[in-house]
Each structure stands twice: as C-alpha cells, then as structure tokens.
Image 1 (cartoon, one colour):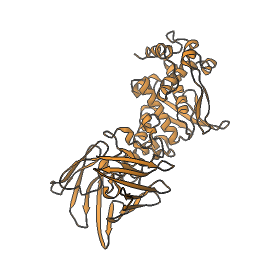
Image 2: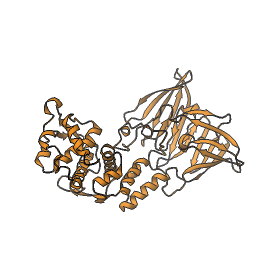
Image 3: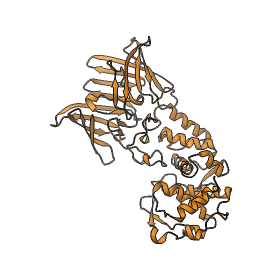
Image 4: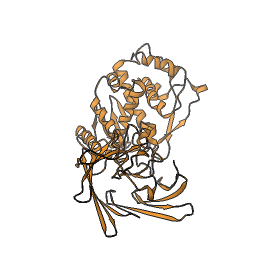
Length: 456
C-alpha cells in the first residue's frame, strides 16, 4: 500500500511528495517551469540522502522532448522514443489508429507488439504478431496497478493510455501532457489552469481527476493538445468536438480549446438541441457558463432532460450577445436582455442572470405567472442585495433571516412587471446549486407545487 503526503508552492504546484511504498518512506522534491510544467524530481530517503534525479525538457508548446534519469536520456520525437545510455541507443516506435496507441516496435527491424486497451484505453494486454499473449495487467479505479502477469508490459503507456514514469525514480507519477498525475493519490499534482465545468461542484477542486468518476471518464491531456490535424493525436476527439462547435458558430471561440472534452461536448450538445449563440463573438468562457446553466436548469427542474427543457421554452431559441458600451458589460438576448461578461472570476452571477432569462421564456411559453395557480408575489419572494467583492466578482451584501424575513419581497421582483416568476426560477436553479440563502416553507413548497402542476 502506498501512502502520500504533499506540500505546495504559492501557485498550488505540488513541491514535495512523501510516499511510503511497503515499509520504506521516500521524499520526492519537485520543481516546475515558468509554464507550470514538471521540470525535475529529486528522490531522497529519510536521512535526506539523494537517491535519484530526473529532469524533463519541453519545447515552446510545452510538449515533452527530453527526460534524463539514472537509466539514461530519452528523446521524444513524435511517436518515436530514443533511449541513450552511454554509447547505446534503443529506438522505440509507436503506431496509433483513431487516436489510440495500437502497436509498438522496439529497435529497428524488431517484431511488432500489439497493445490492447480496456474501455478507458488503458494498456491491459500485449500480444505478438501471432496473437499470443506477451503480458497482461489490470488497474485499480484511479490507475494504480492491481495485478500483472509474470511478463512485464513492454510499454510505459499504461492507465488510460498515458505514460507511466519510472516508479524507481519518481514514485507514483504519470505524464498527462498538460499536467502530471499521481495514481496513488488519485489527483493531479498541479492545479488546473481553469474551472473545467462551472455547473459541477467537483470542478472547483482543481486537482480533481475526471470529476471523481474514473470508471467512466478519461482525461487525455487536461486540454486539447498536440496537432489538431493529426489523426493519431490522443486528443483527436477533443479537437473534433471543437471543430464542430466552430462550424456551428462560424468562428473558433477564444480559449475553448483549453477546456476538457466533456465540457466542449456539453456546449456542442446544447447546440444540437437547438440553442443558437448569436451576435458578437462568444468566448469559451461565455459558452461554458451558458451550457452549464442550461444543464443546471434541465437537471434541477426538468427531470435532467434537455428535451423537456426545450419543450418548456417553446423549442429552439437564440441567445444574442452584444456589447453595451456604457457599462462595459456583455449582454445577451434570450427573448429579453441579460448580461454575460467575456471573462470573470465570478461564476454565480452570470449563470443566475441566464437562468432568470430562461425563466422568462418558460413563463412566456406556458403562462405560469398569469395563472390563478401561481401564488402572489407579495407573500413569497426573497430579498437580496449584491455588492462588489473588490476582485471583479460579487458577494451577497444582505443575508436573509429565515425566521423574520421569510416573506419579504424582492425589490426587483416588485418594481419590474413580470419579474416575480423569473426571480423564483433563478433561485431554484442557481441558488440551490450554490448554497444561496433561500427560505423554506411557502417558497419551496407551495410555489414549486404550482410550477410542477404545469409539467405533469
């Protein structure tokens, strides 16, 4: 069993890992490049004696090109690896199909070895040209080796098809292209540069691996990496999804390529369901926030069904983005106006505004607020006041006292005709997801009962 302890630098890169493998403890001191790529790992024992040093070099795009450790220097050129030990050179060539590594050849003119993956793409079986088994191995959920045959796998590509570093020199560590990953910890050893899915609370743990679902998801690189035109690229699916979004928009959104595959596919899915993102150019940040909000609405109010949500809003609709010069904000129309900033450290506010506007579309389509079944605004709304948090976002200035203020009316809902239902809708969707103060009793029972009566 391997136990892990860690320390971080000021920008959240892991600088020290202390692992216990069996009964022997080791310390791994990690250094990082200016681009937050792993530059070196120094292995020491409990007395502080240095046992091994591994250094890694990258090209200008952050792609690994060299690694030096006690076994020698390995050069990486596309699908070819060259291990140089003294005057000896060993060349290993890999062959890919459909973005997956399927075969390898060690030494020029050597025989082909075929690599077989499981449902996650993990190298689990190697066979020779005759189909006979060479070696086999199995993995635990987060990538630790669970079982292996007597013969060692001929490749260092293992769990989900990613490169496993030498445990003799760096401990439990794998190269996931954009970041390094520890299967013993079940976490990355450096923080993600983005929040890859604002609608999922798991995404806010920036060390999280595949949102805590290692049995059903993979993370080929943390981002869309490599040459987008290379069909052998392990992130080919990510680039393909980005190309589909680009085709539908007519341009490539800024920084959407930095998102993970699942997040890009979520944006694309809502396009397929009939949501059009129109007007001024949408950034990747805009699209991810919008898609996450749409998903929250479907999940919380429409049985997790995009089909039911699209029926509730009357079918396909467009969100039209444009700049308002007077306040510097970015607005969008979803039947009525709302704002969405290009980039923001705040997530809740733009998502709340979009949920509010979706509420208007539901109300306009179904006529909920005009129905006698809808309880009056004077009794059941919430009061809240927002102010700047001084860091480009917002914070709640006035908290709701449930005991005394439960029936206080939202100023915005009372001053603006037709806003009552949309305010409730936004609180149900975003408020519940992000823990806003939100009263019990009448608002959560009578009003929600009235809402559900329109959607039997």
